[in-house]
View (cartoon, rainbow, N blue to C red):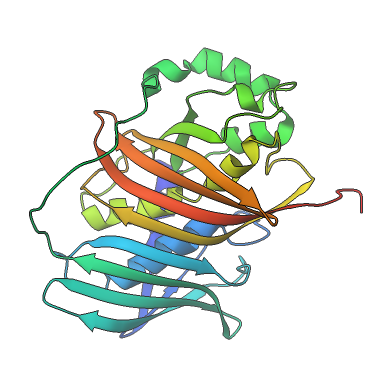
Length: 290
């Protein structure tokens, strides 16, 4: 297991301080604020720790209230809202400096058989066909430095866009408000299904915000956008492994009032729809010289 994945598992391995009270650490890198996916993943871990293992999470709804401070741990307080015969509900507050920086409400459901349908998986190249290593390296060298640094950084989750062209110089014009990217953990994860759901929650915050900017020919990588996740909702439909390739198919149906709405579907490589995400984010244009 590589260093980045070990670091992610360490981040998700919360310290229990008391019943319903947990503490999480952040990565050692010099982040200016806490990555939203970290708080999503840790809060889901805290909620999951208070629920029977045979009752997995099926949905969660989150709000980012204040920017997190990466210099200190985050305390997660879990409130046991409901323990029913089929459903369990948990509310979690992430606390720093005596105030909530993030809230999550999650619902857990015992397995039941039922009616099924799903959307078709987009017709895109498989991850092995998106970019061979030599081609990927050549494309990275053509990208602006902030974007190249983002993709070259060692990370616990590998990102392999279906189309790299939107990141190349001279191609930042208006595009369709959609983005398809293959993702997976960069090393095998433990077999516990709860770990895979929490890792996917962590990864789901990585590229959604930028999807709402593509149609405007803008990006979170440029200096003229103040971007931040405002809320985040996620539904888990089927079992999956986050260390196997998943297609994250994203689109943005609306933006306005300095906010962009994005949603995403996760598919296994054989076309099973395993999770759905929706997020509204701040995409406020600013003057980088001001």
